Length: 155
Image: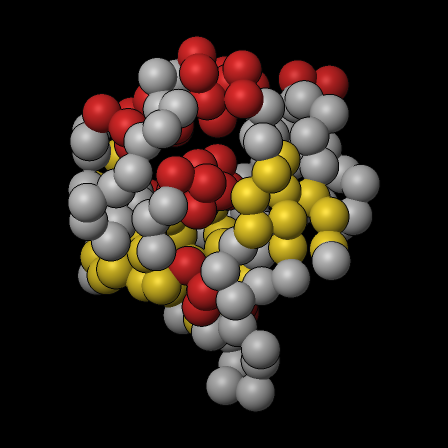
């Protein structure tokens, strides 16, 4: 199924089979954001609720596999059941940027939230990139072989 991010020229696909497997087909949220808990590594940063349209859409670029099936189904299932999930981790962009934040951790939760109709995500917002990189190493990239053929496209 195709979804469009709010206020972004980005369309992404999540297979209907995955959504059905998660029990999330036809789900419509009654709140702005899922119930979030702080990320263990970033628990000293305040937890806030951020509009999805303020976050630069994460992805490896046009044509890059975006989602791991197991992780996406798990996120969709938890969101549809109203379970608490770890908040995404955001980095503040400079004020002259198109977006206010960049996503540091939580791409599956970000895209699952957008696909299911949430307008916001709970987030731990960290400082600028120099602070973030020096204090917390970047997460290791996922193995693309485990990811589906579902890709982000710009329109």
